Image (cartoon, rainbow, N blue to C red; front, side):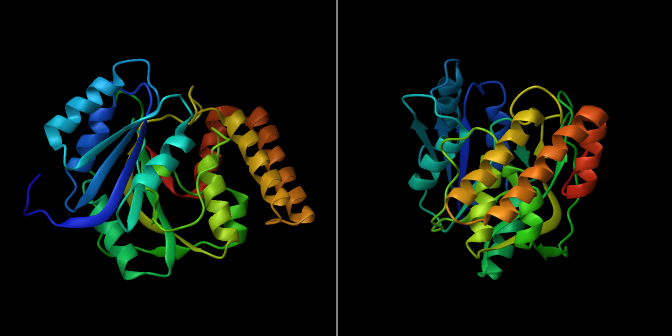
Length: 284
């Protein structure tokens, strides 16, 4: 690492499962930050391929004093991997990245500086660029002056405006990703934070590259299971007393309508509708 590069009090957590072919791109995007995070935590979720070997090579290449590898004895899913990385982190803020995605080189500098200057905010997210599989990462210019929009509880209850690789949050928060869910677990964390009275902000700047096509196979593209995850989130929050029955019922009805819309429009048109509603990502 270049000692002249400023360091941010940020722990980066990447859950790793069968990602031997993509994890280098993710790690390099962290290494190349204009303001480097203080530590990188790679959580191997009991991969059965060469993932752990690649992680060890990356640790040797970029610094054993900077990269921490945690090996889980059994596969638990991204939520558990992120939570364990969270517990092992040491810095004031945590940022999450998926093993098959990447960051803009100024992501940490811009987001951390903004978070540091706005201590009232528990979590911020930003826009991202959805990149078709096989395409190279494009250069995207960033603006120093961008809009920051505080999101209301009502807005967050309707849908998740972020992707997890855009998250940066305070380490000392009491909430965690739902360890019992593999779908919409990031949405559950956002809802708990919002309903707990914490401030959540959307930064109107593109700082992440997500290599997943909406509607494609895999967790991110499995729209039906994501909708089921939403339903479970609302139900669980009602059980915990964070939502009243009337609000929970309306939200479940709204999420169910999304199923019907998907069936009528198909994945492609549904993707366009979802992007228009969220306005937090675009695809190239």
